Each structure stands twice: as structure tokens, then as C-alpha cells.
Image (cartoon, rainbow, N blue to C red; front, side, top):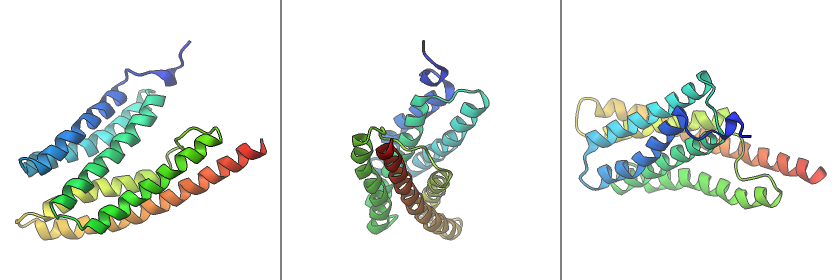
Length: 192
């Protein structure tokens, strides 16, 4: 008999799936027709739906194993697509993209080690990781706005870089906590 955690067809999972489908569309809008207004609207909608699916999952008791996989995957792919698009458009410097992607590469290298110890591939999401992702998801639309001419560009640039600095710092701090958490789990599995 399947448990509630094994559900696939839930509202939060549908929202996460829609967010995943929006990733290539966002990248195409940024790099193809350079339809920045639509790309920005899609990015903001994705950020809102990220918040909404978590809220619905908890309020309607629709948390699931699939949701725990889809939600962070959609977040990572949006961050990656945004980094690629904004770097190629020269909105953000390449070193910032490398710094943020570097953290995910470090954590990705930990997956085979966790699996070798029978611990699966995903560590429980930490609040600090969620805060870091939220900062970055706020930062990118602001930096995107800052790359345009308009009365809002200077304010968007200041706020965008503030969110990027905080978000990147928290992103790496959360990454360090995930590594420590993984080491503790491996140590506990080795003793057991």
C-alpha cells in the first residue's frame, strides 16, 4: 500500500513541474528574441510558484517524496539557466556564475560518497539553503532590471547586488553545512 508521501499527482508537484517546463522557455526568451519583459515575468512567476508550492504542500498536507526532489531541482535549474542567460548577456560577470555553480559542483561530488555509504543522494533541505536560494531568486530579476535604462535601474542594481552578495554567502555557508551533515550521516552509518 502506498503512503501519502508516495503521491505523484498533487498541486505542489504540478506547480514544480510547470516551473521545470518554464526553464528552457526562460532561457530562450533571454537568449533568443531577448524578450526581457516576458523573461522577467516568467522568472518572477517561477519565484512566486516556488513559495506557493511549499505553502500549499504544508497547508493541504500534500508533501511528497517527488516534491522533495522536484522543488530543489527546479530551483537549481532556474538558478543555472539565469546564470547562463545573464552571463552570456553580460549582465553579471562570469566569476559570479562560476562561484555559484562551483558550490553546486562541490555538493554534486558528494553524491557518490553518500550513495557508497547507502545514504541516497539527497540531504534534507536546510533553512539556510532555502534562504540562500530565495536571496538569489530575488537578486537575478533585480540585476536583470538594472541592465536596462530607466529610473529603476540604479535602485535595482543596488538591491540586486545586495541580494547577490547575501545569497552567494549564504549559498556557500549552506553548502558547508550540507557537507558537515553528510559527514555526520556517513559517520553514523559507519558506526552502525
